[in-house]
Length: 281
Image (cartoon, rainbow, N blue to C red):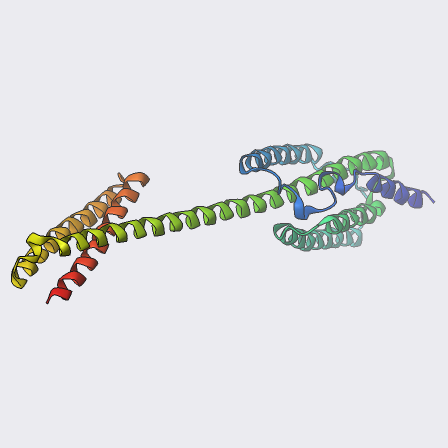
């Protein structure tokens, strides 16, 4: 009779714990999606700190192996063996459930049912230990369960919250990086078009220049070859400078972008001048 009452007390204790959905709005899929990157980082830092505090609470709860002290001193070898089997089975099942929960949380899937299953597993574990508890420590054991279950539930909520928010943060940062790259590609394309048009205009002006047109074919080719040579020299110098600055780590992002734009300009100019020279041959 007493044992049944004891089981009932444990069940009531576990059921009376705060609902899992309090911090999740019933759907983990949308958890934190409305937060900014800065807010997500701050929230994760706060949750990490809270989780660390709960770890300390759990360590304090288990100081001097408190639960072990509640065990009967007259346990037989068979009972000790059975106790080890129960503990081992619980740890193994908990690890499996934790792995599933973490994977779901990373995929931003609701894990409410998984957390309930974990708590149910914990409840069964508490109940399975009752035959090994010394009767004079029954009240202590119930108080222990109450504290342990509270910490266990809070850590489940917080740990999952951290996983989900980190995943959302990664997704948000990734999306921003993609947008930045798209914008960069768009700008580079616009710049290339501007360079193309500018160089085309200069070559057109040169081809329409009276002084240039009055030159012999060989002279025209020599003028163009000299220009191409000078551009090649500048291009080689820029590339060497870029490599040297990159090696020394003294190249800022702005300077790197500027040098790359100049290199791109010279390459386009070279291609167009070579084509223009070939058209004269």
